[in-house]
Length: 540
Image (cartoon, rainbow, N blue to C red; front, side, top):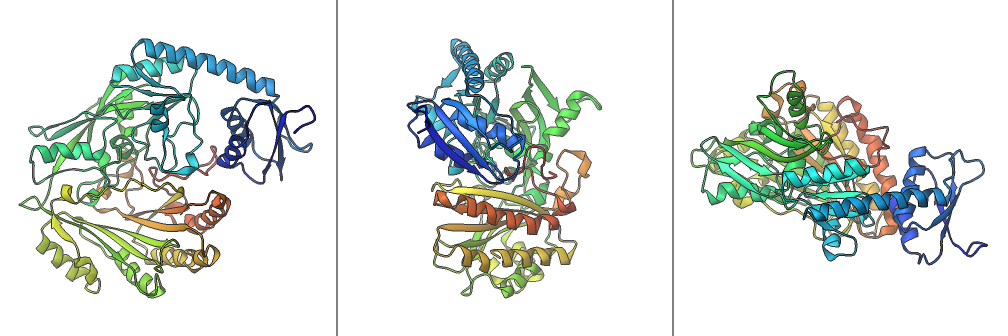
């Protein structure tokens, strides 16, 4: 307790604030009295870190009377009354906005409701303390306009969520309004024009059903691998799918989009928008610049594509390869040959290097295969290009829609991500990447350092290239069209006290791999790294 009877908490912030850790300390206290926070630092943290801590304290109870900083710190000390006044004013404006939306019969979930808890639930426990002031569930573009207008008028923050699959949690609101579009989920297919129309809250499974129900064999919608992934974030980030190599990026099939702008207008942009117009520039940006950057997309239209096989079949399947010795240098040689092979555009083979210390095996590789052609053609391709890789025969010939697997995580874990972009035109680069990964999994270093812990280290290679390279990098906002592999690293763990160790290990991975990425900076915008400070970012 502090001398005046307030609850006192000491927080040691070494080089950077870890907001979940701050939340943990504050959330475990019973705040019956005003809160006194003493901050201990090494060096001079940035102003962004200071603001992050202030927001964390406010979010965790609004009971701050004073934040005490070291004497030599350059941080400006926020008096508790200043934070309290700021928060009370924000709460008042939020309540006015909520009441205005409720009068328009727009669905609003408040923190006390079970619907609210369900709406903000996340599979990544790093975001377990994210608590927006409310969740709004619009059912139409008109209702989205009403939400944006209220937020603009009341100066409230809005975080857009389509389906919540953002790797870095950018669709997870920590304050303000969580604009949850999941009730906007209509999808329709017009086979005369070969156009599918879908609301922003649709998942790919819902969109694919339009082909299944209509029995339109032989056609494909160039969407995501996982049927529970939202359509909007996928397209707006460029769209790496199982048929990217056959038909280009998902955003290359975008025909039209309806967008609610920051001033509350509903506008329509098309691929035929007048050259040089604001609509044309916005349409360009919606093809790969990321979600929720230029407004709230409420509806999209995409072209439907025709598969190559006459009977409308593709080869699709999954194979897991766990050598007795784990991922060794001999295995890496096979994988290098695999990545350096110039596969035909019809072939997409994603791979995942697995180092899961929760399992008894010593690591392995998982393959997900999609081939836009017949089984016999697939067999000939494998035999011709990579004879030693016989395990790739173990796939199933079937219609693509019947082979899609659900990948939404069911077991709650803590997760961190970072992504990289590689080509295969330079043999040396691929070999350096593979060599770096095996050293990192340092495979032996990861196993040695975290032996006995419930941790998992994954490196996922998403096969790109093919038809995605046919458009110029400047033809859309998606720039890295020369890439053949978009790779992302995933670190998972169960024990919350492992967070600092996991962050340190991921920092080592990023330091080793970032320079090997295109231009030494490239990353895929849909696999972002949240640890980058606001003023720095990957070149996406």
